[in-house]
Length: 140
Image (cartoon, rainbow, N blue to C red; front, side, top):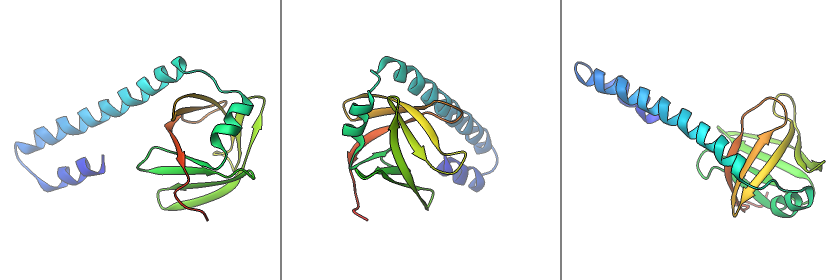
């Protein structure tokens, strides 16, 4: 979306009409993506605590572009997003993946998955995360 915003600031005249439509189309696309992600999550099998531990240990969960979360086998958690690094702990509780982080980012998530695709749905407030599990890209 940032590219759309940069384009908006450049032009004037009739092209302004096109930019407005582009912005509305980008917004609609974002809403449809979130909606379809939620529907997709319902169709995936829920992972057990043992499956979550096996799948997440020494892996990273990422959207492959904007953010990534590193889950070390010793329970250490690192998150990289918007130029910020956050650290904490992760653990399994009643077949949910839980993050020990300051509010509002901590809490537990139901994990559903198929192949490398993973959907993490918060048990409380928060947004559903859709991404993939892959090898850790750093070893800090």
